Length: 313
Length: 254
Image (cartoon, rainbow over all chains, first blue to last red; front, side, top):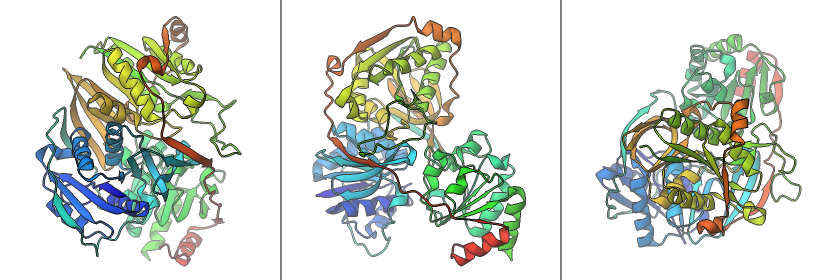
């Protein structure tokens, strides 16, 4: 039994969710290998070789891996799978993993298991269905088990103390049916939403994009990331990559502060595993108060600046 | 590109319904529960119909796999502007076990049979939340995939796409034929008007079985149990910001 974890990275740094995927792979049991495919990824390979639990780092470099297109990476993964006979293949359930692994699975003629939240045994996983309103325990009887891992449900593997051997694998031939043009990433000095210890999120109650400044000020005092509900995204207040919820990002920080968010099921699905939840809303009947550890019924336009002020003392 | 577009439409429990888990933990209650078209599939239908209105494609074919009631979902797509439907009948035990891999095989077989240039699907269904069918259909056909699309434009025989990724947006260009999956911001689906609902009744829906397409429905995934997630207990109300900050400090959160 052995697991291949597909590393997500930008040729400079490993994306943190890969560390959660490595933990999930370790829970499956057996040897854990990581595949790093990129255009110039020696640095990332070195980073992974120090991660605890990783036995082997497989490195493939080619210009065709630019942008991590699934059409180009799939043949490489299939080829690597053939060479090493892994029983399991996994990646983080990020936009990268969700895009890539089903393609790999279909090529292997196996049914993948998406976004697992628990490893019960080498073939049995728990995942959420209906936007987190039910948990499904699934036994996978496929010869090769392909799955993606919800990052917030597994601790990150420690980034020091490991000593994996690195090995070059031959690059696959370019497929050339797709072309990566560019990325426009939202620039922010704040921590990344899915790995931040504190998240401050705003909903429709904020009334405008400008008013999110109130949340940015509070977030800066708490070294927090800023998120938003789908309602706030749909209303055009903030970009979609800030969305927390079933159709956005799943977060589970130590502290989640929901401001002007009513608490639709789809939003709760994205944040209800947070350790402590605070809700600030002027509507005492808002469903968000059913999941909040501390609820404050108040006008956010008064309460949030007050809180920022209190934290400045 | 001027060809035919297949649009997958899935019948799911309506998004507004509160899900109940069956007491025997074999699944969720579906009897007597309102069903609708998966919201992401609506976005896919809208996009296909828009392409047709711009005369960039010639025909929109709506496909659904499932029991008899799936035809209602196809009718909805026809009322939105799809030209005809294909209902792939799957019922009973086969329907319970029907997963994205089997549906992908059906869609891939239909794409070949219909000589489709583009398959438009929702990025995920709101029942099983798998987010797999588009990627797998593309793999089975060896076509490129443009998943989580928030902008699609045809350019000769290529498709320019903007995709929703974790940190922002990504721009790619893919060859056709291709599979594209719709994210939330691709468009706002139209409501079917009464005249269009009436017109849709006259449009044709072909029915067939997976076996007619040479697709084997064997599934090697077994659902052992479905249960309620642990419920979070509501905590306390605090009266003032000062109280709140005090409690958070006490709890060691700030």
